[in-house]
Image (cartoon, rainbow, N blue to C red):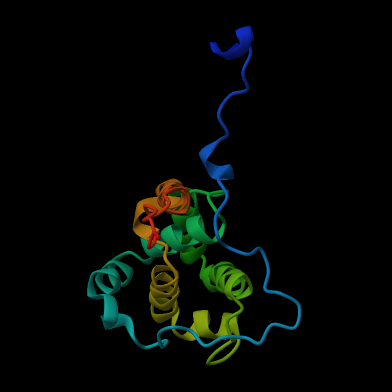
Amino acid sequence: MYPNNAGGNDQKSPPPPMMQMQMPMAPYPPAGAVPEQWTTGLCGCFEDSSNCFITCCCPCITFGQNAEIIDRGATSCGANGIIYYLLAQVGVVCLYTCSYRAKLRGLHSLQEDPCADCLVHWCCMHCALCQEYRELKNRGFDPSIGWVANAQKMNQGAATMPPMTQGMGR
């Protein structure tokens, strides 16, 4: 039971889980949508040098951060990072990571560029992860803070209205 002083009712539903917060992100591109260009190139890794360094040293971190945002918090950064690490040990990680590139493209109606998602991840895994991280940042998300913090930030921005100013009077 949750106490509620209004109206004499002693029952109130619990607050919704953070993962279910609504975000301004369409689940699929609209039918007939023309695919957009990526906001940065595949080889633009040094546009975000700190992410480039982290991705070169420990790509499982960047992948985990990206996947948590792409999955809208359904999976955690840590869980995806561990899956990445384990699949990398047997040499098949690109089969997993390319599926998240495809999800990201689907969410934002992006072109499959410069070639098929799995081929991009097979040949240029680190560059692909950096590009996906930058794409999320350029679309208003910060993968480094996780889904919950991004959801709170987006919902706070949506709930905050600019102050109303009175127009010219008579």
